Structure formats: C-alpha cells, structure tokens
Length: 192
Image (cartoon, rainbow, N blue to C red; front, side, top):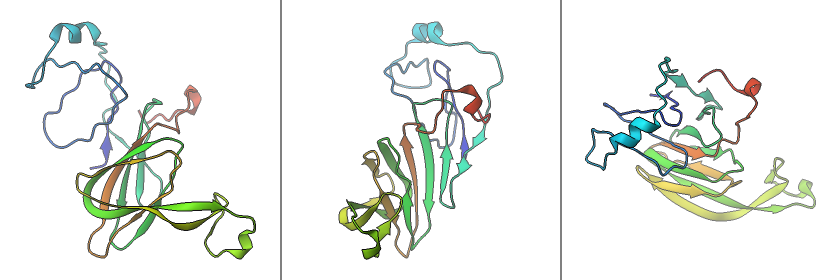
C-alpha cells in the first residue's frame, strides 16, 4: 500500500493481479493488444511503442504533506495524485489548489463541507478569521456525504473540509493538474 509507479507515454503496461488506481493524462489513444475482451489493435500498438530497454524506476513513495495527506508528483504537468486518510471524529481541510480536482472515496465515509468566505474590512472584529485568504467563513454552501465508490468534483481554489463521524474514518484520493510541476530539470525531484 502506498506504492506508486509512473509510466510515460507510449509505454505498454498490464495489470496482472491486485488493485490499482490509475490516473492518466487526457488521451483518446488507448491501444490494446490482448488480455481483454475490448477491441484490440496490435499493428497500431507495435508502431507506437517506444521500445526502451532500460530499467524503469519501479516503485516510488509519495511525499508526506502532513499527518493525513501523501502526495505523488510525477515528472509531468498533466496530473498529481494525493492519498488522504482522515481518522474517525476528525475535521481536515484539504489544501486548495488552482486546478479542478476529482475525489474518489476508497473506503469509509465522511462529509465534504464547503464554506462561503467573505472579505473582511476589520479582521479584529471576527472570531473565525482566516489569515491565509483574508476572509471569514460565513456559512456552509455545500455538505456532501461520501462513502465507498463516491466520486466528487471540486472547482479550482475550493476550500473543502472533510468531516468524519465517531464510528469510522475515510480514505480518499484526489487527482488534479500537477500545479507543483516545474519544467526546469534542476527543479525536478529524482524520485522517478
């Protein structure tokens, strides 16, 4: 659990056993050669593969962002994945990012709560001041229950809090554009 693998474009891959969560760049060119009842196009697959014979980096662990979030940042701008595990009876605010994101509930249950924020003239007069955005939470605008298999869309720059009940926590994954990616090779991690 917690292992990750990055496979570049035009690299063949197959799942032999176990469970996997796959996040891929926008594409309309899935080409299959076998091991599936879906349509196959062996000739196209043979023409498009890179045929690299080097040993790929097989397993990479993400970087722990805090006690509840592990982030996996591949060396591409297309996507980034976070695994979020929130224990029972907890509230956890997801870091908002300048990208739309999709959350998938892998196990457990919780509520995803979004609050309305209003700008402040005088922050000293308010108990619920948020210094990171110069606003105050004035009310709930969305409260969505999630459980195993739920998929949820969050708009860019959305402040969302995960609220778990006393009986069970929740395990979610979040995919979004890799806003942490830098095209400069010197800024890239050597994890992949």
